[in-house]
Length: 285
Image (cartoon, rainbow, N blue to C red; front, side):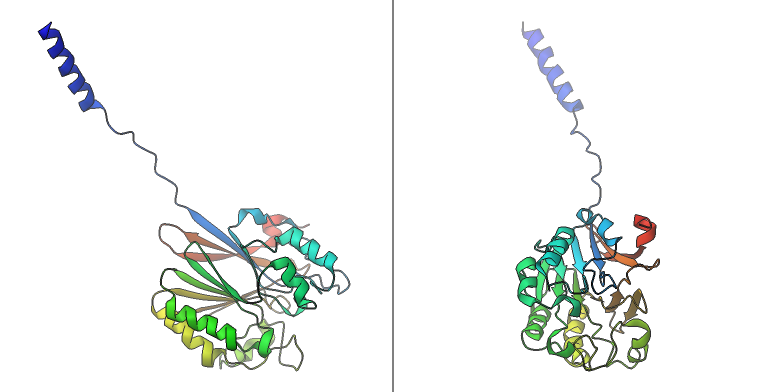
């Protein structure tokens, strides 16, 4: 009897020695995707619709939707238009970020009722700090509460890997010696006295120094403007500090319309982007 017990104990020890923790398959690297599109409006001022290909975009695929403004010709003038836009973009979602353009602000109260957001604000997601600016205020200048918001970010941003700023007008072009001569080939808006125009402003004087502080701490700063499409579909400029100034916009019906798809890698923390032709991606109509 004693011998049998000893054999049982030895067998148990041997079996335990041969059992290993199960080898789990490597987990896929998580990637988050964010879509930027702007100036989606139909060129027929009486037709409150977006470009037909925009209606076909699989927005549910993306972790956030970044809108650069000018959704339709008069986005907020009629409740029916806002209902139509809400059905496409899910405007009240915390993951839909709209930088309103001049074609969106006929009725600011109606617009806010659908977006459930202020005209400028911050949003934090996947270790990215997103900022929405309102370039319709103060003739493109960033002042008062908007400037205070950026000052607070410059003073306190520590956890995020990137700072991504979404806006409509290309406010960094007018007062820059290299960019100002390119306005006519890039921006939908030129210099004029109306609300849709570009104006000299305080970007390089007051905003750029704050963003440079963030960039100097190793946080990639990217600005994306949406008032493009007529002259150019994409624009890119890198400042000496490494800040990216991007622009992207559509012109309804053009075969070369494109959007930007940003991808963040959960392992490397890097944020990259690619230009995607709508016709190639979605088909021609």
